[in-house]
Image (cartoon, rainbow, N blue to C red; front, side, top):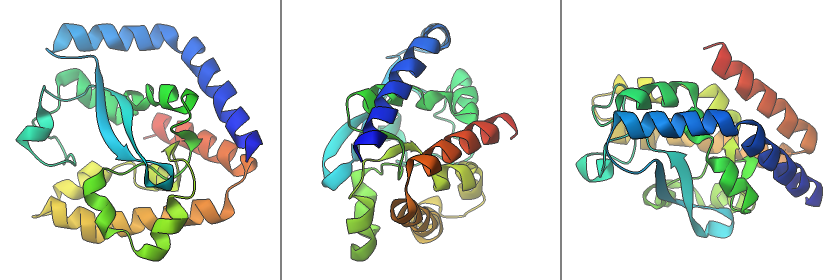
Length: 199
């Protein structure tokens, strides 16, 4: 898949250059509206189950993970004022273009999970999903864009994620890996952008 890597690299570099004014504005807003670092880094599981540090714009208070679940639920009280907007518009994901340039991620691929939930991956699916680089977007990102709201309606968000959300995400991930192509990547990128602007 050398063509996919070239496509990812060129698009990610162009994206960082073209979006640099927006990225700088977001960085300034984060700094002005809350204490803490601009970027949030978290351990995720990548290709061949290798751990890596994913980049995001920080949308939660400092040490948020020590004050709650690894997943966010609805209007999570740990989310900052600007964080709600960044999450809703998916702008918090833009720093992952850096991870694409570094070769840790792809523009399109199964979303990388935190290590704690990998134990719930069925063995057969696990091998398929981790055979490719994780992505910024995929079928699950499009179809389940309001995941937080779904979890907010559950009495036990953690179990709802494991028993309902995760299996569906894995199904979408396997579907992508088994049918992946450059044409599909372009299609999913267009769908993602359209989904964000038409929510």
